[in-house]
Image (cartoon, rainbow, N blue to C red):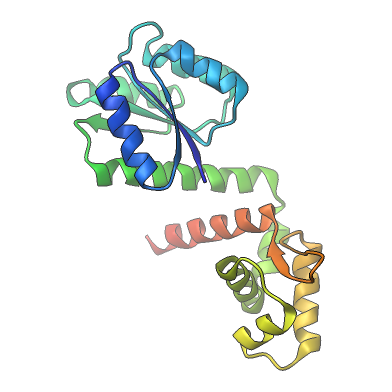
Length: 216
């Protein structure tokens, strides 16, 4: 579950954004000031921070600068009044990922959050993984299907995978599973169930992001 922090000194807006994100399946932490947000960031990792440009205490730009000092790659979405869009654009030049205007539309807010998180996941893949190895491994469609079925079911036994893929050649299946395990995308537990590793989940997210980009 993605961890998101919402920062705003306007309680109504803060609770409104938190309610929307919570209803969409995000774990939400609330902060009423920039200083409080920095205290949370010092103790906890977040996938995304949303905050207003205009707050008492630290302003949005000041908070953005402090976040960039501590976490240069932290995804950040700015919340701004429609009349102050130019300030949000300036914030993006200083490292903000996106902005939404208030009063915001729920679908617009969720679209922005989803897009920023997808881009962050892809950037994480690009910087932390050997993409040549990844692309070579996943060039085979059967391996992509194996990963997709394991992700969908959570855990699968060898014979369950064979049945789902309608593959009677067990030697062939073992060959592809071996490659996926050696690449670090799958592992087996003590019950011989195949499960995605955290890297495997990350890879699938990156592949979906790439496919979506290529389709646009």
